[in-house]
Image (cartoon, rainbow, N blue to C red; front, side, top):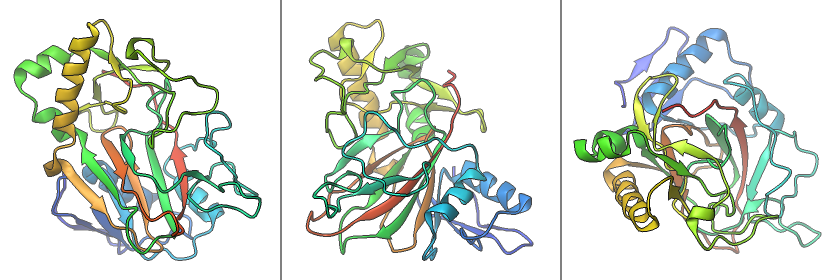
Length: 296
């Protein structure tokens, strides 16, 4: 998917990684409003590279991060139900806090702690998942907490013709009961049979609304179920698809620096986070760009 290095007259520059996704983009200041030309350039680079990294964006305020994200689409408000120990103080409602820091009241100021986060697509368990997200580093640990992404176009393209035909019209239930670190969300009960999972049902193969290309859309592995199949066949097929999707050849890893902002396309990537030392501090601000119905 990555394209050759590109520039604009305004000085913006894209430098793709050597992997199948991911690129650095230079010349953008997240603290300033985007011009229409810069927005178009960023949107094309985003479609070409799936994940964009904006480095050196120190001291971006939550309001400025919201302004930048909003230029790329309407933003969702952070969840008010189903979160894990969220504490948000006076931040804009569009800002979600990802952190392991414990506040003065003894409660976490954000979600997901310091644990490893399994491969997943953000909020695929709702009927209209977000099209993209921006994650901005405010505090980072000395080591660990890296975020990796995989290219779900390539995951689909590399499947055998037999498997592509098999999954062409199948849908998968995306379980809503647990977050990406395996914690049970408030208001949910443990799922003992994936066929009884509560969550949205989406095509296994979706057509990206911008590129019109096919990609796998898996969400998360835990409690997933392919509608209409015997449970053992669903598990076997999902294992095959997940193995194909998490092949290291499809991966690009973001090693965080202070002031990094990452913009990813939630429709054609999955991501995961490494664990880190719980005694270290990690504070990230995240925005979520509203998506559209998943079309197969």
